[in-house]
Image (cartoon, rainbow, N blue to C red; front, side):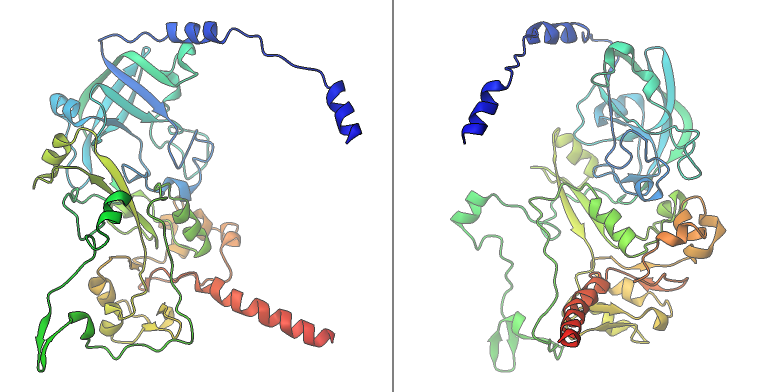
Length: 428
């Protein structure tokens, strides 16, 4: 104790004497907003960041949490400004290229209308437009760094003098969630405040009227066409805290790596053929719920965003299991909805019957097809195949696949204590 006290006494006292107020004043004086042009904010995207990982196909195909765009570079614009400039995004992701000019430099990018964005502002992600980064990420988008002047490098924000000019060139964005914004979505995702729940816990509980049977009125949940399943003392499940999820997509990348999920590239994403076993749906919330989604966006100038991770639910009475003509999808005694890949003949009946739309069909032999060498080098080169997970099979063309609850890790967890016990017995 005495030694510790002496050490503190000998330590030199360091004081910070800089003029903080003066530094803040100097910084703020260099940023003077005017009423001319747009205000442009440059930001680092959730996937690519500053662009150092632009050659990583896992990150290129990772959907942006808000826009759900992949493999593309764009400028986000408020609906009001887009309407004035004649810029439109249709339900298929088609839009127009625009010329964005700041500090005397011009880049050409696609325009993406973003609900909730403040009128008069624009947003462009950094990290794109690289020309010497590798086969995957070269020449995707435009380099936005030259738009920033020396006095603006600290905040990547340009307060005035930014112009946006629409061109006649059409552009197709690759987005994984193109469908219209589903306002009034009580059956998709439900929200409630804790205070409201405490007042009436039964308010959000789904209930159904009793139905008739041969002996009177019964609860519909007591009726079933299924015999049910018997489980061996346990039933696997997965819990996701929706209050915590920010839609970052880290789980999507981890799932891809763990399960050798194929990266398909921009064109296949446009064709609605992305292979992600785990997706994160984004919904906008609003007090208004008009029929037209554009009217809803106007009605709510600052909508909130709700994220919902969606994967195979491994249903107890899975509708996919009853329609497979070759029993390629089965139910285990531990509650897993299994896929037997070498039995699947690709009818896709299971995908049609899945209410969550989480099954993926292999349209190509992604791991041995030169068409996907650029977007999927980890499967199409000998060196790339060395990073594949040896515990998970690589699926072939014509096979249906989906979330397996990482059954290989479940099996590994079972085997580890058994091996430990066997080693202990051998040691004795």
